Image (cartoon, rainbow, N blue to C red; front, side, top):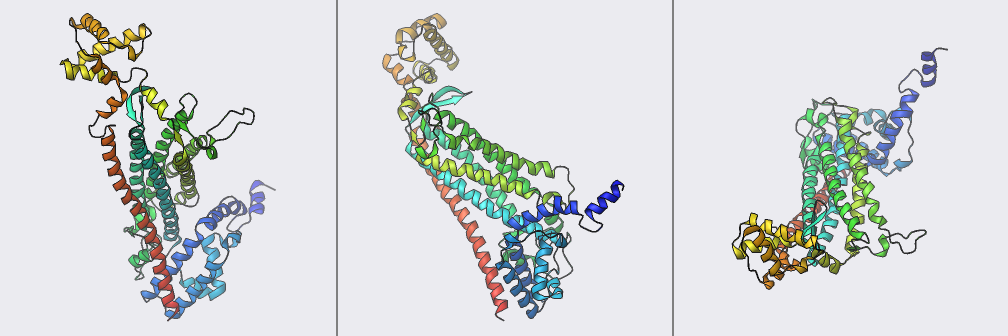
Length: 503
């Protein structure tokens, strides 16, 4: 027996071949069964309503179709196994409908529609719900951050540049900086949602149909904000997938940077964040250990979320602009996985940050170390003594080197040391008082006088907080409106179905 004959005997000579069915169609069916069964039934009901309202099918036909669809909807489809006889979920459900209402009538349901616009509509319906869930959990975490920022407006700490202590700031200033990056992430999610929640239904295969359908009515019944107007674009356009994928990659990259900082702050050496018991694991051998494992697990999750989202680009790159399987059931779960990992990260951080303790004393002590307030000493020499900043910077740098070389600290700076160094470098003494030096080197003063827009001074941070809280209320309302809109569309569809059934 040659290889061809062997394969034909193994796979059969009719569609679908055993290998094709087992390797491709069955896994795809399992994805359809998990995610798209309910959306498929909703789309089918809306299609029947629209066909009746457009006088394309009769009232009795509509009623029987809707009754059949209601019965199928009540079935436990999760127990349905793949049957190669029906190829995919679409034909499986169609067969069930045929058994209930007859083959001819069941076939009328497919007037003016295709698996092309059906599939893409299902994808968009599932994605929009997951995107609303993403918005909700991101907002939960942002709310915790706002609360922490409010609590720590006067918690002075070092700000870091190039991983080194740079200048004093406040924990609130730092948290608000991260909050603002998450707020931009929320705006990106909103834009992605607006482009996901557009209806492709009515595009049919790719050129619409010769039947007088009403795409706008279908869009409203299914809770979409508008249409993907151009039918070719409705089928071929995949940028709504890439937009969400890129948003997920940016969000998780932002989160990964925060994860890195947070884990550093949890170390014994930093001793800044203290996680409460529900979020630490004990060592199996070392009794003293409090491992921040809840946060550690989020680091690979962020990487997994980014990787799954990147798969969208890898799978769509260099594909034709048209109806292709590359955008379908083998791609969609990568987005779902990315969202799932992201949700898990956000939930963990929400719980951890809502309950953790902050070591304010250590932060303040750190802000007094390492000469990180000497920028203000240089500024004081400019303001009070009329030096150019370059000259002041040179003198201040020499003071730091002098102290370091002599094993002295910032507290050891005296008017005499400054006069000695300024005389050596500039040929004249500065005559600054000890009180002015102490004020310039005080990290609390350093923070308080930085009242410029966006600075760490408590009153400026308070202004930013009020602004963020006002914007946050709008974001919460947007998320709420999205969910209400979807719920109202479901009621609208149910009312339209009931109206037909009651005729």
